[in-house]
Length: 206
Length: 206
Image 1 (cartoon, chains in turn orange, purple):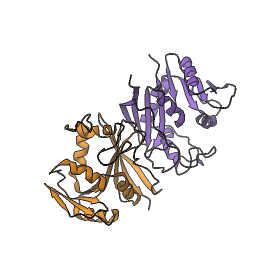
Image 2: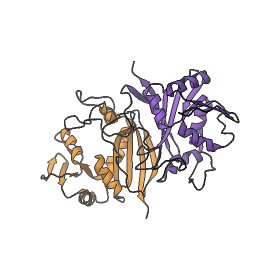
Image 3: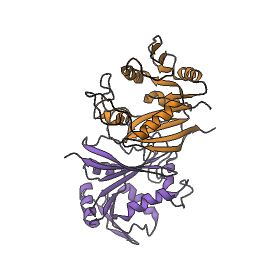
Image 4: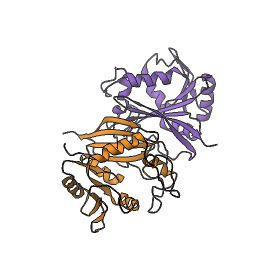
């Protein structure tokens, strides 16, 4: 199996990955932005009433297919900080590389080791690729990091998960122009009660 | 059959309905924006090589289902100007109301009558509703007009057609916050070789 770089982001129909005011402590921001991620938990939740549910069949299948091939994860610092709330054993089972400006020693929680990479997105990807071997590297946000890898032509498959929400403000997934030779080819749609996963193969013209 | 107001727009994965510089004469703008509408013609075309093809099965089915229930169309002036290029018999078969600032007498082409409404979006919708009787009113752009009707809570069903393109710049479908009580409920997905049609039922909380 050849290694692939898979990226995924959840956005509203109007293209936002957070609502307004997504400062630390407000999670995904205001304006009902929790609705973006109902699919992860199989139903409604709020910041005041943390989620406990499991994904529905189609969403679980998407997650299983994506996670089962993973040899390493790559996330930005904000995503990592959110994941820190996932407890003593976040259960990734593979190394997680965190792109950050703040040096920090590696941390092991259960079967997951977090390594903090301070010399940039390209260096972090190189380390994740090496750790993953012939398995996939998963880029699971944030938007800026994902955009950098798309722009570098490093992403083989992009899944845009569209939640049935209009947020009107917040942080956009696509907030700038990427390289014009980046081409998307439809690679299937997964429909669940909560979202639509749009999968695209990515390539850059030679 | 109860009358519904149906709205549809085609946008890129990054939310643009035109590429950059969509002045009159450049159609949908630059940057390969023709790709947004490959689905309408069942394949590639360019401004220099006008389209002649027909939609593929799933796209034709979507169009047939939408158009067959229509009793009136509503479009903005820019969409109308584009449609003027469709020749002596555009074939709508129902009245088309054009929201514009420029007064102009009604024009009949084949089985289609274009009426120009200069007293605003609400007045145009009232006239289209009256003309449609118990049939549907179709709002087929532009983005600004569609946004006005969504914001007024007048749209019963919204179809967002997502083309596998990143344009990076141009006119966004969703360029402002709409009323926060506007709720989208998934109403099905239609997958074609060229696009994904995301259908939503729209409502506003009482």
